[in-house]
Image 1: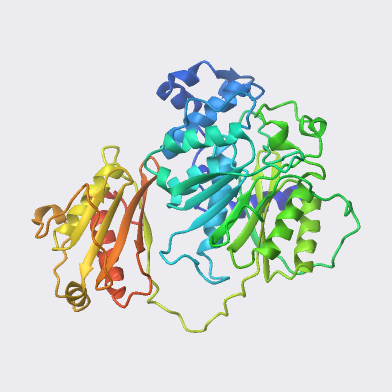
Image 2: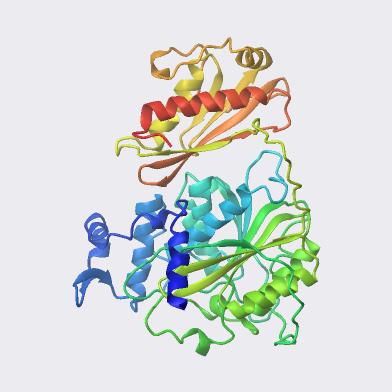
Length: 492
């Protein structure tokens, strides 16, 4: 009976279409062809002689992560991360990012707290790979602060950020001062059976549980600061995220002989393990209630998840969410909580909500982010609107006068789908930025590569409370229509 329930659950999970790795498993033969450095690690696996890699070889798992980041996400690692540093698995990390996107887009609690509508995240223990900020910035255009305690992690995280110039302006790496105790930052999950299997998920809201404080309550965290004394007084974030040190000892961390993903004692171990580490995040969150919309962490043991949920309700949180990640035979859980008051549901459907992003899928190989960016500039300038394109950050800044905004809202400013046939009436620039003023509607259009053939186009207002913001919705809708008509082989 248990097996039937498991199959039923997994079938339901497969209905989610927001996870990149649900579409296909990595094609090792293709990756070996595209990346010669990966060829030597690919080998046939009996009995069916299907191509795979030796999961116990750290160099193989490290190279797989590198080529997947580049092939799937157009991200560049600076050469390799050093030997022995934690080598994260791309599917699992991507799925944590997708779950966060699901939380942020829900209307459970009030929306983004930044004035420019930019989503800001804080990655606890970003590691040498800096994989969460790189994926979040690449996939969704989020900005990040990534913290870590070791000099090696900081050095290589900064190298990996600078190697991706198109998103480097979105990521800050912050050194945490060690207080002299054993530091612990991050830990890795296992891979098995020669496959990377979709990390499927189910979301649930967790009701309060009776407070259970009997187990290992006396084991508290005594490592470097996590959030308190790291987050600045004037900073606000939409979320924090963390892969905590799951293990209490190196002996426990080395119990899985079938994989080799690296990891130092700083990254994998702390006294009390993940329970103590996440409990400290919870304690820190009580002091930073107004600094974050969501506090989140990965959890490695289901028994700890139940304990931590009970702990949260004891601290008076307003909402708790959990999710289950299944990858191969490895189970992990996501835990999220907030102190913000839940949004009261309204019986009236509001259709005037501004849409600030859309995805272009099914793009031909010859159509990349730069082509879409140039079309954004052409579309805007063809209607007499001032804009400035930056090919380094893949953005177009737009400034519109009040008179033009009024014309747009009266539908008197002509829009056409094929903007390349129109001649710009105002000068645009690829070098200088526009002069913003309260008398103008100012916004930015950003283009992000998600996976090959898929781009995210995102709009962000300089002042979301501007009385002229109504024109932004009209412009953004018309831009979406124009880009879909020009680039997409199929409509969403």
